[in-house]
Amino acid sequence: MTEWVLRGVPGALAMDAWWLGDTAPPPKSDGSEAKLAPARGVLALLALIGIGDVLFFRQAVGLSLAIFAGAVFLAVLTTLPTRARLYPSLLMLLSALPVIDYVQPLSLGFLAVGLTASLLWARGGTTELVQRGLALWATLPWRGIGDGYNQTATVMQSNTLRSQWRTARGWAFPAGGALVLAGLLLLANPLLVRMLSDLFAIQDGGIVTFGRLSLWMGLALILWPLLAPPPPALTIQLPEVPARFRPGAQSVARGLLVFNAILGVQTLMDAAYLWGGAILPEGMTAAEYAHRGAYPLLVTALLAGAFALAARPFAREDRHLRWLLLLWLAQNVALVLSSLLRLELYVEAFGLTYLRLHSAIWMGLVAAGLGLTGWQVWQDRSNLWLITRTAGLVVVTLYTACFINFADIIATENLSRPDLVDDGYVCSLGPTAAAAIRASGRSLRAFKPYYGEQLCDVARPKIEGWRDWGFRNWRVSRYLDQMPVMERP
Image (cartoon, rainbow, N blue to C red; front, side, top):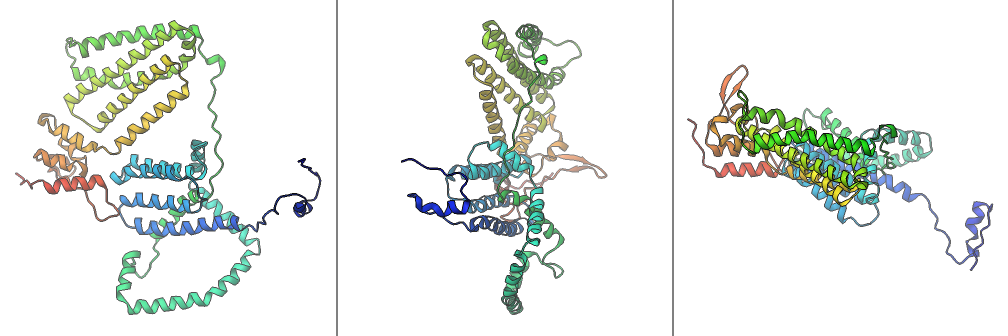
């Protein structure tokens, strides 16, 4: 069947000429769906502000953050057409677990990024997910102000305001009567007054205080970009290095020869003094040798990984260059392992701290990343293959770190060696280290300004209710309850 296309036909006639074909008439659109989506968004926004008020106003955060994030996710799903939601829901659940365990900056970051990614995934799949996420974060929180101003200007310049005013007059009598009836019921029911007072924290005769109003406005500005349709994805273009600054194959080969020779000196010295047990020069301790080299060598390993990415295209074409690059990466892995041993020696001499523990984790990540780079060179994988797997390794490591009580590990390690204990530092670890301090059976003393040396009494984790409940705090408190009470000397 030949399809005839008549160009230049008026739009109205084209719509009325449906009977010339075999298809059904096009459906008429009155714009109700377009009006319905913003209306649902506003209703969802008001409901979420109310939920946020109950969860956060004058309350410590904890489990409430995960509940609120779940409410935001469900509210957005109600404004979307039905589609596959299993994987976005699983992502939302995984991003909320770190906050349920313990509220800290790292867990808050996972919750924020996970919520954003799950919402965008539910809306438009995984296509350009990173670019869409960056575009959405760029609108926080200013989009709510701009959308509110534009909507207000549109309403004021149209006839919609008059129709809404007539609608409001029609609701005046029912609303006024409902308020009078509610007031009479409150006078007759003191129990209801008490419930509302506890719910809204009524003080000085006013329900809406400045703090509560600020909370509402803040929630509205943050939530509206999540509820409104997201902006177009950002176009990300990585800057290209000019040709005159790119090293050639000959330059890369010479660089690898020189760099391997220099790094070989450091590798041999580490093998002799760190692994072989050679005697250090007079006046230098193992701790000093370890401390001065741990962090600079780690930076050297990072630069080595960047150089390996730049040299890989040349190593693909030259077999000898590939072996030089693999040797370069292997020496840098040995360099990171030596840095770990240096750090271990320093911890044995001066104790464990947050910085030293986090540095050890970071060194392990760098060593794993260099290993992946070597495998990429050996198997001739793309840079995208390396970047995605390295990023995944970093995310998994950080996600796992959200569930580890580092304060307890540091306190346990330091208290196991009485001659190295820094009482002030152990006392500053906070309530999550209380179980380790109690289990050690030691009475710590710390210097406090204006008070001198005082007995260190680390408070147990404080849980006031279900809103600020956290699994780690609950676990430490439960452990303390099961331990026998020790009398102070």
